[in-house]
Length: 141
Image (tube, rainbow, N blue to C red; front, side, top):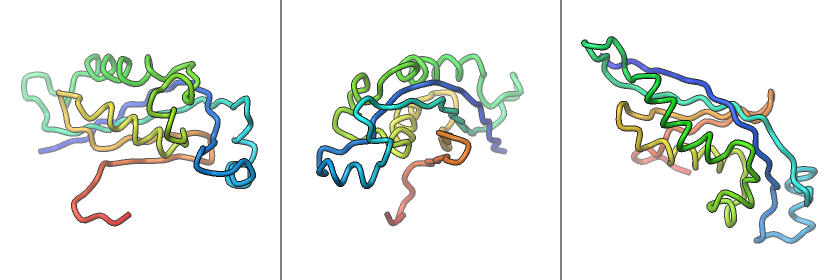
């Protein structure tokens, strides 16, 4: 028997959507006001879903205290109240879109030892959310 557990977290961060591979005009056309040289911020909501069998001794898939500590260390401490472009090494070269942020968070949480990471969902605004469940064999881009 395999169950899923989803836990929600929140953090605030700033970013500027700008690609050095594009001209200033292309950046403005593609990213619009999100290309503001001074950046802008979001209050992100992150859902982390793990799965596994229910431990007969504890009745749980994973101990929430352990999951919270892991997500806190790997994601919240790393991203909360940070400028993603300047303070997160991967975003010094990759554009810190929420798609890329979702991929980075998934990569950081993959090593959670107590259960299998199923997917990460990030809500950037009330209108935008992104979800990543890892690569699947034979998937096309």
